[in-house]
Image (cartoon, rainbow, N blue to C red; front, side, top):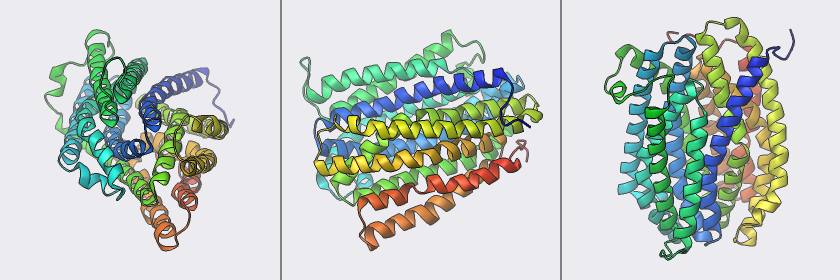
Length: 450
């Protein structure tokens, strides 16, 4: 059997979905990058405070995406089977889950911002800056949850251009308002981190309005209406819990693990916090295509299973794995070449800048592993129906290997932030060996009832 699928439609759909979702993700990351870079030019304390506050946003993002991924897996199968009413019901369930997560996170952050941020660092100035940002930013959580669930529903039926348009509008609004409000241009007061928070909140509200308008006026595939969100099919809800709960739990432990990683580096000084923020922001910017390939894979595999074309799944999975490796190698080269020019934009200490350069070098190597194992496990295996495996895999690697070893390096052995950072990212290579075996056994193709 040939290693590559001989079907032009497969490549066209995969690269189209990957490109558009990747551009959407790129612009979404650009929102954080604009905050990151403008505050980096404002002060290192402001940058560090907002970087820690954004760990809360990242955790919410992981939780909401967990709820949305369950929605996409189910809806893409229903799309393949042309079950439009079932897609509407899945959208209702996903929306309720997403909103519930947004409300819970808002309650915690609004009433206990200082307590939450003190988990990451003991630096009073950094915590104060983060609290200023969080008290405003937390009001965007519910809008983010609603927008994400609606875009996930549209993505499951291969409607992806609206996500790009929404993300682009958010980026433009955020950059303009950041310029005006952080530094006090055009007659507005200089608000610093509060200005950045107001800019992001405004952008989140407007993007939610745009998505509602698109669904009301232009969507013809699903025909979502408000009444579709007023009741839930109990049997479908049971299926969603069976399929989606392992994904939500996996994303939760991953999001918490990222927060713990930031806390470990955060207790190693302000320079380590700033360097980690810069390196990870650029990493997210460069790797959008990798994460987009996982989303595209989920839609393609799910739809193909829904269509009942099981004979195509094995060929698709083999070809996709090769494409992932090429994407990883290209991304690693780009990340390594970008580190010098990018760091020149930041007004930070030489220590932080040097650390950020070292962190980006490490990421340019580990990204090859990320590019293979992440879409292989979350794109192929999850959408095939085996949603529990990624949960177990992430828990073992992150909570039993990576975090304990990193904490020992940081606090017991007193090793440098660079060595600790290498430990924190080592799972991206180690998981590849698990992914190769799991994917190529092809025991992950399951129905919702299994």
